[in-house]
Image: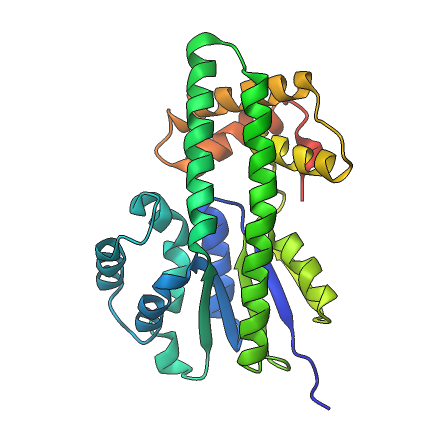
Length: 276
């Protein structure tokens, strides 16, 4: 009987280059057999070429030329560049390694639309000081429901590839965000002994991430998150955008300044309960 190999889900907070850098450093020293990337499936051939030694600049030029990404390539590259650099030339040294991109087009489209909608809601708060609770509730609850559907579809894809490529008994890594916990449950339900590995600890959720997570919990219980909680977290996130994102060179600088000022500093706002 074949022994089941190790299956790890690496959790990387969205947008943070620091978490990707840590993941990249660990990847360089890990003897894995298969790697699933949270990257659009349509880019799989380009990632394969990169792993076969294609120059990184050529890879990025081809991604840009493909027009596959909905988000600005600069922000996408900011997060993923360390991992891509760690993969460049990998298959020259280890030809048997398999790399799969599992992000669906629908998932990315949904994420971009949500980001655009929330950006407009944040703009209104920063312009008027008021929170449209109804719109915020509809947007956040819609996001939670759509995300669950996309995570299920992407996990189905991972499971299908896992079985088709006969990865049982191999060391497999899935690069994910905090939806990795949902992927973990599905894998365990399928009889795969998977585990989570967090790339950045401690991690403090931003106000928007906290709102989405709390809304998801309330939805599972058949309850509504209170108007007061929506107003509080929406205003806190508007402050995060106004005073940190818009005044920083990149997301990492903004996030770590916010953590220092609002979470671990003397003026903390009690986000410590959201550490993983």
